[in-house]
Length: 498
Image 1 (cartoon, rainbow, N blue to C red):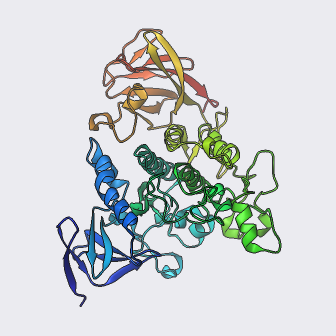
Image 2 (spheres, rainbow, N blue to C red; image 1 turned 90 degrees about the horizontal axis):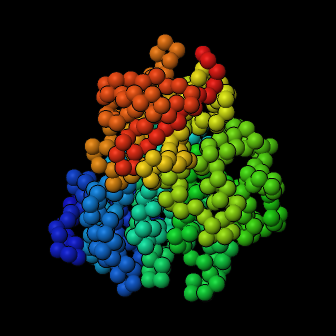
Image 3 (cartoon, one colour; image 1 turned 120 degrees about the vertical axis):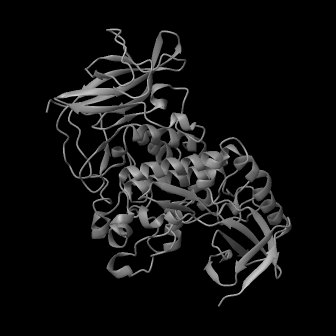
């Protein structure tokens, strides 16, 4: 039976760990506490004074700045943040909370858990590549397309919070983000390597597939060379765009068929991911399209960007992918911010329509006859689209470039009714429940008022009391909230009659 070792953290707390290694990575060896509520991770190599100072800042000032403020508890679910440092037998270690149970595979891989992943961590790579998803991951673990939009929101939100604190992750990848698609959860891990530009340089340049082109193209230079590009906020922004693209389209945005050096595989890789990186769906230059002749059966149809182009992600995400992989691929200052991605993903969630296929959801394409891009099924019948307007001056409403697609059972929330509210970490509990929902009954669409005291048909001046309902009609104007920040919606009917 493994021995339980007792020791103290550098700040005097008593801790214990079981002397039985549970994981070993490139930099650390990991051990469980006896009750498995936390882990102790020891660095394999001796850490210098600067590394120790950075770790003390991460568990001290930076941790307090994120977790010890109003709403700080929210971030405990999005980060696995170290809490203390210790030394044992000459090795420096850190204490971190154990990942929640839903971040471990509940079911084994296909073919009687051939890969023995049951009980292992849900690294994002299993869910971001079409071949791994189709060949190995149990269907019950995969979630649906909407769950990946929600995961994208959480990752973008976590990155946004780090960047607001002046930090960069430096190694954002599907290895350092755990996901649970079946529940729509995500957690950023390995934050002990956080970069503070100008103060604490990065330990690593990143994980292949997620390293920004400017970092790859200068990686041959010495670390102290002023011409060398090192991980920072803009490189996180590249990695974040790659993650979101892969979670929604199950392919890599830069790994196409273009060969840059036929005789030197390493140089070809360096050019394709670095100096000559090119978006596989570049709107003008088609030279790096994914070669379908080389695609494995398990990678289809996702490898075929002509069948499943990035534009299927809808009107809010499409321009961000263009910005990230066309405009900003080699110009870091043009890349979308984490906040841009968070906002676009939330708006996209408001535009999804349910389907009966494996993906279960798709983004409404603003056509008169919407069809699922994944299975081709057309939606039959009329659908109300609510175009949101908000007032910055009394009586004057302007479009918000935000729409809510109505489907049977769709909900309307306080942040739809009032632009001063946002569905983020600051949202109060009383604003998390729906305030209206929609039903199709006897060939008529209705909005049922659950919690909107100011709901009113603007033209008829009819006020809909809580508990009442209002028929939705094309061109109709409905005031959702009379308070400051209250929104007006204009109803647009799309599709033909049922």
